[in-house]
Structure formats: C-alpha cells, structure tokens
Image (cartoon, rainbow over all chains, first blue to last red; front, side, top):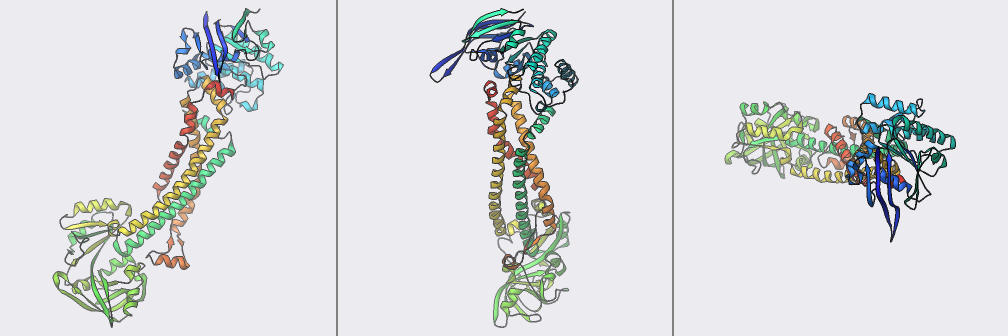
Length: 228
Length: 407
C-alpha cells in the first residue's frame, strides 16, 4: 500500500546569480512499513529531499503526495497540523526540548494533539520501555548520553503513531555501539508499529540494516534497490 | 495551557543568571518608581492637607455667586436645616461655619488691609489646630470681644497680647462695620499669605461687627475620606437648591495649588517614564537573546507540529513571568519602606525646612500609601513587557523551521 509518492520533484536554489538544482526531477514512492535509506555523498540532495517530504520545505516543481494529500497545496498552518499528525522526525542533533524530561519530550506531540493524560502516559511509557529507557523516563536530556537522547527522539517521533518517520542522519553523532543499538530498536519498532522509516544517511551501518536503498547523486535517483 | 505555563516557567530557569539580572533590573526600576511616587504623592497629600485644614476645607458651600464676587452682601443664613442636610452625608466629617470679609486693621500709626474670619472657636480649632499654633496669648473660650491674629500681621501692626486692634470695614447691606478688639492670641499660620493678613474673631463677634446676625459667607466642609471629593460635591449640589447655594471643592478654591502639583507631577512622570524605558529595554534585550539562542529549538518545535502562535505565546508568558518576578520583588521590597515612612514621615530640618515653611507647608515628607498605586504599577509593567516582546515575538512568526534547525 503506497503511502508516499514523489512526482517529478525539483528544488532549485537561487544562489546569487547561479541557480543550484539541489533536487532534479525525482520520482519515488514508498509503501507502508518500509525501512528505507536514502544514501549519497554530501551535497547530493538527501537532506533537501527529506525536508520536502516532511513538508518543511516546498518543491520548486513537482508533487509530493502523502496518502491522497498533495502537501504542496496545504496552507502553512494546515501543513503544520499535517506534519504533527502524519510525520515523525528524528534529527541528527537529537533536538529534544532541554527543559522537559524524557517522558515529557515523548508526550510533547501528544499534548499538541490533545491526547487525554492517561493515554499519553501509557503511550510514552510503552515507547520509552521499547527503546530501553524505562528507567530514565524522568531524566532531562542534559543528563543523558547522545545514544539515549536519540532513542528518546525515536520514541518521540513514533509517539502519535505517524504514517512515516523521517530520520536525517540519525546516527551521525553516535558511536558504533549506540548506532547498532538504535538501529535495532528502529527496526523492531518498524515491525511492531508498521511505521515507514525513511533515513537519509551515508553511514554504512545504517545502509546495511535498510531494506531498501535509494542512491541519489546530483539531485537525481541513481539506483533504487531492495536489500535482503 | 497548563503545560505551556509549565514549559515557560522551566524555560526561564534555563539561564538562571540572565533571568535574575533581568528580574533585578525590573525590581530596581519598580522599587525606585514606587518609592519616588509614594514620596511625591505623599508630599502632595501633605500640601493639600495643610491647605485644606488651614483654610479651605475639602469643600465649601456659599451663597450662589459668592465665590466669583466675594461680598458681605452675598452671605447665607446659617440654619440647622441647612447644616443638617449637609451632615446627612456620612462622608462629611464636620461643617465649619465662617464669616469672611475684608477690613482695615489699625493699631497706633499702622494700618493694613486684613482678612477677618469669624469662626466657631471649637470647630475651627478641630479643623486647623489653631490653639497648637499659638505663639503668644491664648485661644478663644467663647464669644468674647477679642481677636487672634497672624504673627506677621501682629509684627507689622506692632501688636502684642492684650493690645487693641481697631477694625473698620463695610458691613451687611452698606452698614458701617467697626470695632475694637483685644488681642487674645497670636498664631503662626504656615501660609505666609494668610499669616500677614489674618484676623480671627469669634463668629458671633464678627457677625455683630458686620451687622450680619446669623449670616455666614462659608460653610467649610471636612470629609472623612478626601478621595470622594467629586462624589460629595455632586451629592450636595443635588441636595441644596441650586439658585441659592454653590458647592466648591478645594481644587476650585485653590487653583494655584492644583497647578503647582500638576507641574511637579509632570516632572515625576518624566522620571517614571525613564524607569519604564529601562525596564522595556531590559526585557527587549533578554527576549531577543533568548530567541536567538533557542532558534534551533524553535525550528524543531515548529517542525514537529507546534504552531508559531503557540510558541510566541510561550515566549510571552516567559517574559511575563520574569516581569512578574521583578514586579513582585519590587513591591515586596518597597512596601515596608513606604509603610514605615507613611506612618513616620521624614521630618526636614534646617534651611530646607524653613524654605518649605514659607510656602505654608509643614516640612515633612510622608510617603503615600495607596493600593491603586500598586495595581497601576502591575498593569504598567505588564503592558511594558507586552510592548517589549512585540517585535521579538513577531520574529518568531517569521522563523522557517529548516533554516532555524540548520542554526
């Protein structure tokens, strides 16, 4: 079942007098429950593509369709709501809210969605236990390691049961052990929750775990292959 | 909402030092604003009390047209019914009848125009504490044929206690008003313009001299609380027949005092505005720094689904918290000082005291204690914070998540 479709997507930046084609006519689609990696060298357009898929940036040309919603046609405030209800984000630098505990960070989006308290608490507990942080629920990010923070970020991304999770270089700041651990957790949650994961990465450890690898170069899809 | 308030509260303690410095700047500004204003309003109160008790009363009732054309012929008959209808208002503390007119005062070779004020001795003393201001002689005991004069006038006419003062003037309806009066006492009136012309006579004595039995020019009214001056004026204006009586407040009777207070008040406000500007810039600087430091975080919050308006609201609440901390500390710090000096006014001495006395004002500096004053400061600080955060908060609405997250 297709949940995401990119149709001839372009992104052109006007850098002074030169136009930079960061994304140059990409066609892609993703099924529910995929565990896919978008790989490519630095500057190939991975992050730009991910930002557009996440509705954080608008394509210069082309369409991005989530289920049947053309996200480029949404008004800014509707787009924010659309992101909140449909997309989970994991960032390279964790980007947790420093004054909130792990549990409160996970519950943050559920708050925005006005979940009742008991449901929020049950869901955050379930997810934090799933990422192995059942005993650190009341810790603030400053008291946690990078790996632990990124696991909280994954729990936060999944909290409101989004259609897919976008992870931009999620392992870039982690050591090998934390990376392995995080990937195992994401793979497991991908299976359990049937949520699509799309990574942008140039980390081989992530690439090895991915079930599908999309290679991008110069803003175009070079290869798109499943991986066993 | 509760969660946003919690988030805002925690956010302000992320950088404790900055929060404390900002709150401290608000504290000092509020502290000095409150102290300065309390002193200013206290001084005005003192000036007004002096003027009101020594001369005007809070309100005066006259015969219609008397104030614009002060003539002995425009007197009113003092009746129990009239006094009763004024005293029916519970806000009225006392009604002091007077007969005021001008005369020539003479002693030996010296002559001078004087203001004759016929008073009910006990009532006038209760209002003006005249007996406490005696520098020689004694106060009236009843309706004696005697006078009490201001010290400067006594010096000019070379009068001492038991000397004789001759008064000559025009009485009611053209009658000749003349009399000889023993000087019973000399008072130090703290208003120079009164001290050099005032002659007090018992009311009946003055009425006899002016051939105006039972007539008075003025019913001076003292109120329990002077705050409701206009209210009492309106009440009395409705109660008393308009064609026969006029009701004037001390503001109308002493417009020069009102103007003096207004001009001084304006300079006080300029200082206050300077303090408010300091608060505004402190808050503005803090919120700008805060937003710049947290742009990345704001980008993430917007990315995961927080509306910019909510984010702006959280930042506004944060600044209101800081403003409130400074404000409450300022109020808490200034309250004991103001209360102390409200009940124990600063007593001036030396040349300063003497120069203040020449304006007819007791040389003390009490601090005013007014609840509305604190409420106003709270509202003003809240408004300043809200104004100071307008631009920073507007800048939040311009944040682009992608750019902000890039840092």
